[in-house]
Image 1 (cartoon, rainbow, N blue to C red):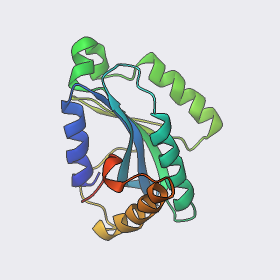
Image 2 (image 1 turned 30 degrees about the vertical axis):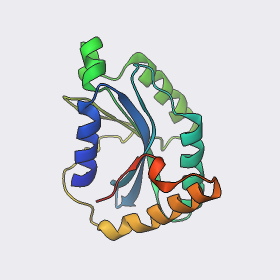
Image 3 (image 1 turned 90 degrees about the vertical axis):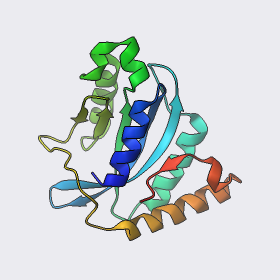
Image 4 (image 1 turned 135 degrees about the vertical axis):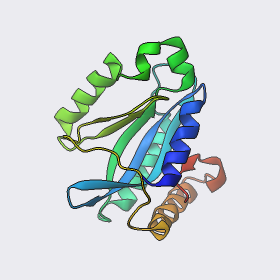
Length: 170
């Protein structure tokens, strides 16, 4: 996982609010190299779903990036706030997480998800792969096409770039 994503995910986990979204990743051999994170929601609550407006922007970004070789990974956090209310979620997926992931896997056998808690990073659907620290082999320049596509998607919807929370800038 690139250090800039590691830092941003750590920041999200330390909060009281939950976060969810998508991570764009590049396949490399049998691995996925994580590149860019788009938040689809960030608020307090244990059962967090994507904000409809943000989800539409994320879907449009993915459509615009199709054919560029990216895959997506669903991610969410069990933050300090959540773990304070439900300590068992510090080291495990919730039942709701597992049911959602099973549904998604039936629709898409390549579905992958990352859950980050203050204590662990848990992967679903990557069959034995692990997250390794380190910066992207593709370099920071790889993020530019994603940012350009996001800027176009937001402009098409009349949304200013600065108000859409997306993380991933190295």
